[in-house]
Image 1 (cartoon, helix red, strand yellow):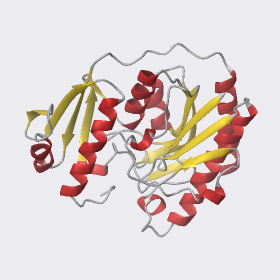
Image 2 (tube, one colour; image 1 turned 180 degrees about the vertical axis):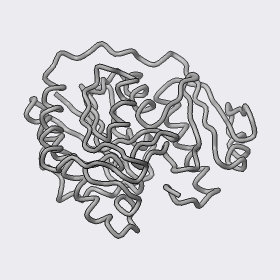
Image 3 (cartoon, one colour; image 1 turned 180 degrees about the horizontal axis):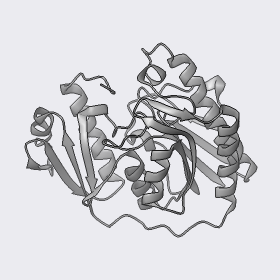
Image 4 (cartoon, helix red, strand yellow; image 1 turned 60 degrees about the vertical axis):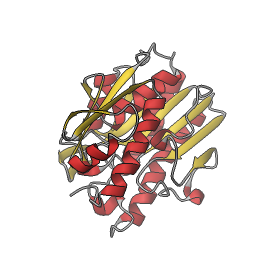
Length: 276
């Protein structure tokens, strides 16, 4: 059994603030170790379920958060950037299931450190008219590749968002949001035991039937800056619905990769901190 783990940071056990998840933050070094421990719990769960190959993609920010020496030896690490598929780099149809660790809710939700990919620079996103964030777009892309999402960890808002997309995905709430930068924390040992147990159960169960993405999808993004939207119109196939919203049609995962190009263009035009 081959397992793929996409590891974000905002939904990791104990972390609630930008200082916990940004390299310049005063508590970042502690945060990256907490991230590794949540990932390691998922790896242990996968091993217990019989996984023979585990790939971990460091999917947060600079994508150099997990120290290689802190990762469970049963897993291989994809680290650094740029990556053509960003948070889903290394995901292929040869893998049997995907696990999302440390994920967070989309922009506009009151979950811990909620946003969609680029802090407040992205105000909202839609996939085929449905509001979407990192969770929904990852799920839809994995479905298009025919890889089921087996489990997700994060705060209670992230878990609810995943359940809304696919109720068959098992979730672990490692904290409950009190506000965007505050949470009621689950004790670390208890949270990681739950992650390990849930991953094992999700991979040991009969795979659920999941709905693949439409043959051709429409992704729309509303940016904080009209300058970003205007510049993106120079890319063939990109159209606008208003001065700050652009969209494109295509098949997943190609559309996911195109969105990565949009983000690189946006980053070159703006210099906004992720959580202001």
